[in-house]
Image (tube, rainbow over all chains, first blue to last red; front, side, top):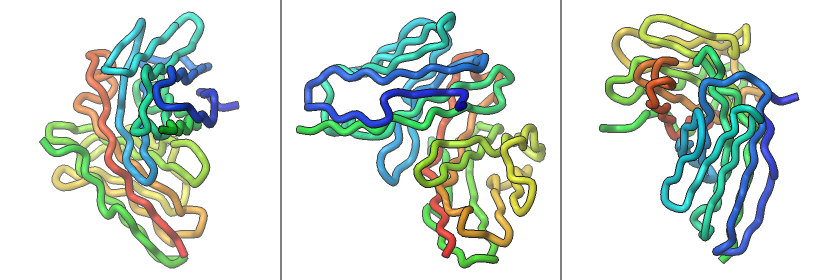
Length: 109
Length: 119
């Protein structure tokens, strides 16, 4: 069993829809990252969370430490949001990430 | 301030050859992490290095793979006698303070990856 589980694996949405991607983890963590990876491209860290909620533009990330669960929300989705979103838990020693397998998002105009 | 620079972006090697992937961390960052993304799989941790030290190599295959981060120059991930199963994207990331940076709120920065194809 993977230490970090994401759902859904694939997601197709119409432009403008509200999108939620979920992440559950079983390891103790010191922080959790949401990463974005475009096809054939590099990885960008969108958020780092250790508690509560963060907002950046149309993106919102929340984390519930007690329930070991985090969500990434995209409001008013746009085709340029199409990418793979990866949840990554930074382990308690801070040495390494445990990665989810990613959610492939396609936003249709 | 340039980001994390990886090169080459794409590398093709024949089975049995050596592959060398380079990573220059962001300016001021002394902690480097290497990750591998196999086709159709998620990212996996390989190794964590500080200048001249390997801190955690628990994710590195025991044979053929090695990593270094010398006092001067980029970090290098070296794969000897490559096999088809080594074909993957290799990502490097850097942070300024290692695990301490997590607690201080600093984040980790990824390079754009090096795509290795073994033919």
